[in-house]
Length: 538
Image (tube, rainbow, N blue to C red):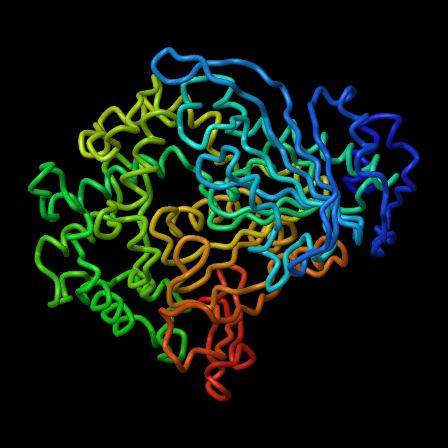
């Protein structure tokens, strides 16, 4: 029996007459003009306050019924002893052209209500959003309306952010969907990148029978460790940065000025060292293992301080508080700079959101550092970091390799990761997957339910000198619904990416399931994915 039918039994008698079957045959598109306002009657049974309205078709999106809701409204703790409002918010969109599928869209950053403004499910769906494909889509604010980190002062809000919002919103959305269409979804999916990727991995670990298929993109699966690493990186770049004469604080962007070619020189040196290892010099490193011996000391264009800072970045903080980063030519991408050193007037996301989140959400007791997150990062004590972050780690991090229940329920987990992600290290998720392989009996067993795809050159979730446009959702659907595991996913270049060479405009590449990599066949168009084979390393 599929998970949607299991959900129907769990939700109650309301959903028992849904025509569930075992072969997933009822997946045709359903046209509907049902009464959107009428489903508000479900609020009493769901302990939720909801509002509904219909939205006309526009901008390539179908007409849909929109339901916004608040679960468990309460007053809790805010920073500095203040009181703050809390609720688990959600926004559900149910299209007229429903395809009988449910799509839970993961959040981003520290969530809050801002994530509810972007419920289209576009990132993993290729050129068309999941909503336009007919999925009923829901997203959550993660248990708090605040678009800041003040929720970290409330214990329940940390739990809701960590995982409990999924547990509240998923069944609520499914009930509303089933009432609206008089039928439960045939398939259920969870898709997210960054913090949404962390939520996706939480779903596979904590709620193994909620979703048939899950996509975890560049996942912050060990988010508390990531926050510590962000402080470490901020300190390294601050040591070589110029100081603002008015404030006396480091200007991180001066460590690698955007008008200089410092990072481009590093990128070129990485390519010189390991680009050809996949059989073709093409400005991409498809075989990352070939870069393990790269030495930043060989890059003459850098100062000694810049070399030391980049080496420290790639080595990670002391005491095994985080993992290493791979050397990848995507270090020249603007997305790498955005997180690490920023730009004039902005010290980067690590020193802003990263530091304030570390202070208020990921350490116990919490500290309000939003007024000066850079100072907090520069003074962070790594000797006490493990003890400070342990309580939050148990709630927020999705680091379990016990996916037996997920596998037993028939779930499929597709993970993708940018090799030049400057915040969530590719080495980290590769290490997680290696542990999963070791515990699960190797790829022949684990590959049946979990696969990892590495994307050379890609920064955080997108961008960089990379083929970062791909349809992971269709690949996941084929895996879930037709039992066709993704042997490769074809990726293309973003036509709006100004950071790629002109001769890459029509480039495609296969994304291969780890540990395989895309190897050039020796003949054929070097910009065509068909000229590459997913090969297993020697």
